[in-house]
Length: 262
Ligand SMILES: Nc1ncnc2c1ncn2[C@@H]1O[C@H](COP(=O)(O)OP(=O)(O)OP(=O)(O)O)[C@@H](O)[C@H]1O
Ligand SMILES: Nc1ccn([C@@H]2O[C@H](COP(=O)(O)O)[C@@H](O)[C@H]2O)c(=O)n1
Image (cartoon, rainbow, N blue to C red):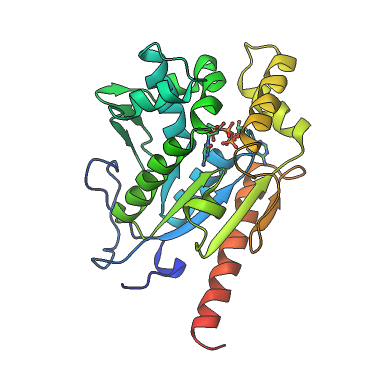
C-alpha cells in the first residue's frame, strides 16, 4: 500500500463512483493508496459536521458524516411505517436500505434509493427516532462496514470522518483521532440558534435526551487513550477549525518522525 501523508493532501481530490460527488482535481493520488483518516467524535451539537467539513475543505480531503447513515436508515424505517424502537422491525428494513452519500464537502447529498434525503434526515421526527435505530448492534456492524468501504473507495488523499465511535470502533488506528466537545449549555445554545422556529428549551432538552440515549451505546463523552480533546466552549467556529488543523498537523509530524526514526 502506498503511503499518503497530510503534506500531499491539499491538491489531491478527484471524485468517481456512486459514493462521491464531483470535485476538482489538482493532483492525482497514486493508484491503490489508502486515504489518510482523520477521526472525529463528539456529542450532539459539538460542531462535528460543520467543523469537519471545513477542515476537509482546507485539506482538500473528503468528508464523511456517519450520522447521516443512521439518520437515513431512521428515515427509511419511518417511510415503511416501522416502529424504530423495535430492533427486529428495523432489521427487516435494513436489507432493502439502498444508501449513498457524497464525500465531497462542497457538494453534499444523501440518498436512499432515488430519494434525495439530505434535508429530510434533519427533520425532528428523524432526529427523535435515530437513537433507536443506532442502538441495534447489527445495524452498527452493517453501517461500519459501509463507512470503511466508502473511505477506501475515496480517491482523495484523506477523509475526515465524524461521528460517535470513529476514534474507537470505525477507525481506531487512524493517525489523528479527536474528541470535539463543548459545554452542554453552549452546544444547546448553538443548536437552538440554528433552529430558530423551535422553542430553545425544547431544543436543548431534545439534544441532551439524544446524547443520553446515544451514550448508553458508545462512549463519546470521554476520550479513549490516544485521542486528543478539542474543547470549543470558548472558541469561535474558525478558531475551532484552526485548533483541529493544529492537532492534525501535530499528529502527522509525530507519525512522520516516528516512521523516519526521529
Ligand atoms: N466553535 C463554534 N462556535 C460557534 N458555533 C459553532 C462552533 N462550532 C460549531 N458551531 C455551530 O454549532 C452548530 C452545531 O454544529 P454541528 O451541526 O456541526 O454539530 P454536530 O456535532 O455535527 O451536531 P449533531 O451531532 O447534532 O449533528 C452549527 O450551527 C455550527 O455552525
Ligand atoms: N458514529 C455514529 C454517528 C451517529 N450515530 C447515531 O446517529 C445519530 C445522528 O448523528 P448526528 O451526528 O447526525 O447527530 C446520533 O444521535 C446517533 O444515534 C451513531 O450512533 N454513531
